[in-house]
Amino acid sequence: MKFETKALHVGEEPNISDGGSGDVVSPIHLTSTFARDKIDQPTKGYEYSRSANPTRDALEKRLAALENGKYGIAFASGLAATATVILSLLRAGDHMIAFDDLYGGTRRLFSQLFKENFNIDVSYVDARKVENIADAVKGKTRLIWLETPTNPLLKMCDIRSIASIAWDKKIFLAVDNTFMTPYFQLPLDLGADLVVHSTTKYLNGHSDSVGGAVITSDDHIHDKIRFNQNAAGAILSPFDSYMVLRGTKTLSLRMERHQQNAMAIAKYLEGHDKVEQVFYPGLESHPQHQIAKKQMSGFGGMVSFELKADLNQARGFVEGLRLFTLAESLGCVESLVELPALMTHSSIPPEERKKTGIKDSLIRISVGIENIDDLLDDLEQALNAI
Image 1 (tube, one colour):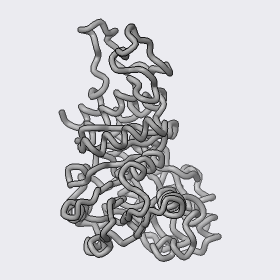
Image 2: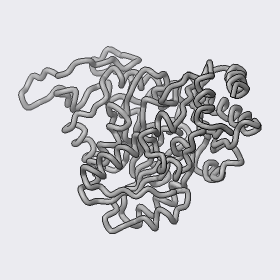
Image 3: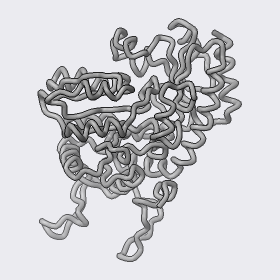
Image 4: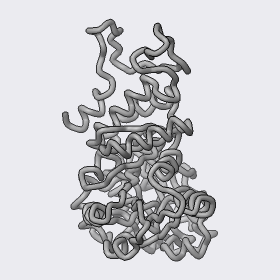
């Protein structure tokens, strides 16, 4: 099946032949526990919804299919998924390598929880240069963690080349694919061992569910993560599983519109005299544009840009927008805007932000699916007010 077909049918195959009711849409199984006839025979493998739930199973099956993976595991949030990966693959004293430009919550988790409390050594490197990854490998390196494009500067790295290093050194490679989604990028096909998502974002797409996911084809990785998820209880609820299932059905349509609008906005901003620099992989001016074309089938809906302004003027710009909602998060049908220095990346010390290129005047926008003329008009009036 092609992507659009899998997004509609996998995981929600109507059951008529063996006594099922033929539901076209997967029911929301809100039950916490499952009855059984025999003490040692759970009904169809279900015994307690923390361990398995039919609605969550349907979503996990679909997510695995969309990423061309064997297993999907759905979590209560993207950070719950990330934390469980670390708990499953690393031990105290191990070392991991991460892209230096990451979502602030991920970096906080790595540096302030696992590094400080569990003695997991973390090296942040500029993964745009593959040799920086190779140079950072140590004897106890067990994991490489990538975002590509990164949050918020939309830096790109070559997944296949880094996967070759990981394979040679017997290191796990994880790719956060939240920004691109499996519609535009398939890290497992490029050599990654596992893919992580915040399903809150594009996969759900409607600002009404929080969740996360891990997808892998490796039996060992799956078994470890599945065991620890059950042990720690970091599961996605049946209702949220249903919401993400519904969201994935229109993912291909939404991503095409997100990209169409984002490209128009990126080109508009690139030509504006109050904009210093625009970061969007679809622009030929992007330093890794060729990598983006090589490993992705599209460029997504995220655009970041620097204003020719100070922090207060940047604050005035985002607060002056009318259609772009001032809020954290991304990947929703409505357009969102945020100021990373004061919002999503405020937990990163200022010197570290500057080191990775996150300036006070950096604006990140998640371009929605509204009419493009309305979005451009809104940006124009806010820029004129600076």
